[in-house]
Length: 373
Image (cartoon, rainbow, N blue to C red; front, side, top):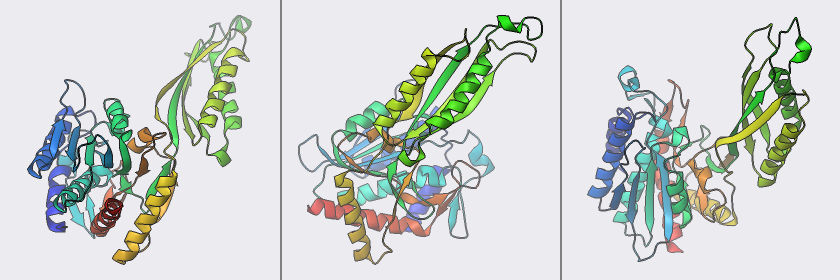
């Protein structure tokens, strides 16, 4: 690949503010990639629904079929607000590129474009589809159905989130959901008539303690009461409280176990008079490796050996990505396919320049092997 041109392109897109809430910037990113794919001869569709996040779909199919052999995924949005680029634009220092989204994940979507262009130029006998969204950092509400639709038709998916700082790819991600729990008590004067009240805060405290007993780390299940709040004054028995719980899990049976426990605690509150309700909010199912994933890993190891690269490693993580949205589908998913980086979602974010060509060569060699099958 032409690394010099890649870095010029990367500078251009990193210097576009495209925080998830900045629809203008997200549209600018979508237009950039739509134009690049069209120039490269792909069939391109860009969504521009008013008030929603844009996404780009590019295709290069070598046979008449809806089946997708290779699906590339990535997101064009970042977590950084408009104006961040002016404060700290793209720069290169000490073998690293920096700037908002340099690693997470503008380098990844750009690498996906370079790979797609190379696959098309080599005329590999594949149905290749590229899907870039711009709302991943806020839950992908505008794109999740589209991603699942594509994933259901695909054999292999490469998601271009950044590689781990160790250089590892990601073969497994935990499922993650947020739960909003509300507690409605009975207010009373804490000094004059506390017996007439029912404290929402005390019932919430019972839930906080119960969560520690619901944890099952050996099964990959953890719960975190990340936000808890309630009450109005120290001399008032709390009428209202609420909490936001983060759940991470790997098995559907664990998800069901947790939600059954929630239902039981709702049905039998410890504080008489308090009413409790819970709601599952945004989240993702787990991304678990399949038998085809193991075959994909072997192909990547063989590709690395043929290229003289250090054998790739494959990690499991508790963090979520759009790859989780394909959980439960027959598609084989490999995540963390973008260049290696670190310091994500902070002003210390960096991209390791030496990993760009290594990733390009390894993934291209792997896909060439898949095409040969």
